[in-house]
Image (cartoon, rainbow, N blue to C red; front, side, top):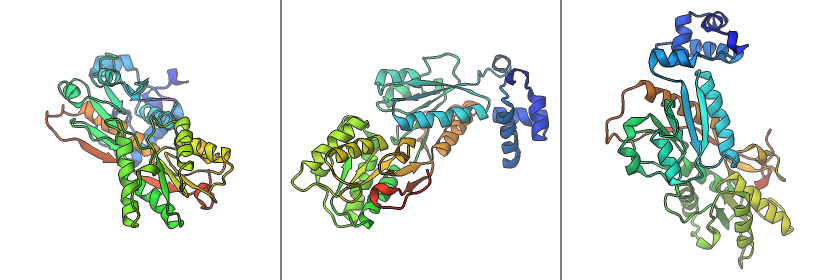
Amino acid sequence: MSDAVGLKDVAERAGVSMRTVSNVVRGTGRASDETRRRVLRAVADLGYRPNSAARRLRTGRSGVLSLAVPDLTMPYFAELAAHLLRQAALHGCTLLVECTGGRPDAELEIALGRTDPLVDGVILSPVALDDEAVANAAARIPLVLLGEGIHDLAAPHVMIDNTAAAREATEHLLRGGRHRIAAIGRQERARAFTSGTRMAGYRQSLEAAGLPYDPALAPPVAGYHRSEGATAMRALLDLPVPPDAVFCFADALAEGALHTLRERGLSVPRDVAIVGFDDVEEGRYTAPPLTTIAPDKQELARLAVAALLGRIDGPRPVPGTPPTVVLAQHRLVVRESCGGRRVAA
């Protein structure tokens, strides 16, 4: 059906002019929030896709965006990518998804727009980005960064407040009467921004409660995979005094920790309470269901796409312009892994 759908069809469905549809799809002109919602709903319902070849001839833009994430096997990035694909489609854009593996060379090539000459702009979740190398050619392609690290680049940075979220997770365990709270997710490599921001919130909560930070309760991990969580949990249980609660910096780590606890015959949350981070779908079906920090992935995607389209249509950033930080919301979702009542999946 999408091949037969044109601007006129969308305009009739939304009850607006064809010019209004064109402006909303391209992100130009003025439209009220209600008008914009009606148009985008009609676009989605009818499956309208702009003619990208004609658009490129008319505007010099292809309508093709690029998303680059470290690892699509990680549930968080897979779910976030799905939200970004939907948001791009609502704006009549195609989103190409690439996986960098966290390699500096791959991140640099993508940030400089070298992987596809048709791409109008890039949304990148960096792990090892070389700011200086990118800054020298930052005006070459519009760039939006996702994630915890504040890079020295004149580009929008879309993220949640990870330190505040980590404080909330740890404080929740403290309020539940836990006093020996471990953390799984500390990384010792350079530029470990996720680890750094979440460790900061964890330690702030301990300090506020008058509890000392014990490095033995924060074993290092190489990555945020289930196997790393399982291994770290074994190390924690082998301590002379094991923890009574664990804050995991990713739900995948928490799933691994739950596996080890079952392996050792321990009960969650009676013996050890667990809180994760990311609110991925699998965490709703673990045994027991996982309490977690839930970033608003839909809002992250909406903000990132809007920021990129604004950068594509706006003036090129002036070198030396400080980064623009755009914050999305997060919330603590309490389920049974820390003794809370189960919430709806």
